[in-house]
Image (cartoon, rainbow, N blue to C red):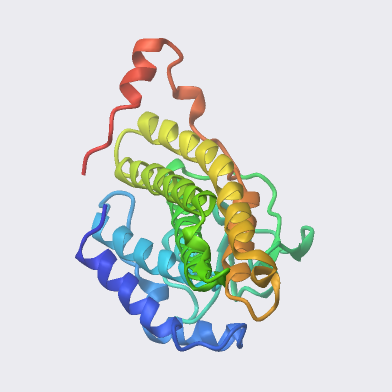
Length: 293
C-alpha cells in the first residue's frame, strides 16, 4: 500500500541519508531532518479529523530511515508532536510514553514521561527511559506502533538488500554464492518473511482510523507476526552475509541492530484494547478480512 506522498517521502529521505557518514553525528543528522521538515509531517494530524495522507507520508520517512539503518528518534518525536502539538522548536526531540521513551534522557521535550526511570541504552545504542504505565488513547498508541512496524519493515528491507548484494558479489569456486541452491532458498524465505511484515503493517495502517476492535485485533496480530519473523530475518541475513556483517564498517549490522531493538521494544504501555475483541469463531473470522482504504 503506497501513495504518492509515501513514495515521495521515502525517495527524498533515502536520497538525503545516502550521503550521511556512518555513524556520523546523530544530532547533526537530526538538525538536517528538522530543516527538511521530517519532524513536522504529522503536526496537522488530529484524532477528530484524521488525515491518512499525512500518516502515509510519515510512514515513508520512517521506513526510509529504517532501511538506511539510522536510528534517529523521528517516530518518537512525531508521536510526541501529535500528543502535545508543536514542540518548543522544530528540531526538538520529543518523547511520549506511547513510543516507549526511546531517546528520553536527551530529549528536549518530554510528554507524559518521567525521565528519571531506568535510563540506559537499547540494542541499537539509542538512549531510552522506561516510563511508568499510563492511560494512553488507543489511536495514539496505535499510531506509535504502526510507525514502529514501519521502521522494522524498512530495517528488514535494508538488511535483506545487504545480504542479497553480498551473496551476489561473493564468488567461490568461480561462481557467486547465489549459484548455491541453499542460498537461493534462504533468499526466498527472506522474501516471504519481509512480505509478511509488510502485510501486517499495511493491515494495521488501514484500520488506524476505523473501528477500534478491528484495529486492536490487527495490532495484536502484527505484534505476533513481527515477533516471529523479525529475529528470523536478522539471523538469516547475517548467516548469508557471514562475519562481514558484524564488523563496525559493514552496513548490515546497522539494520539488524535496529531490527532487534525495535522488536524488543515490544508491546506498548496502557490498554491495548484486546478486552473488546470477541472470542467466538464467527466474529474472529470477520476480523481477519482485509482492511479497506
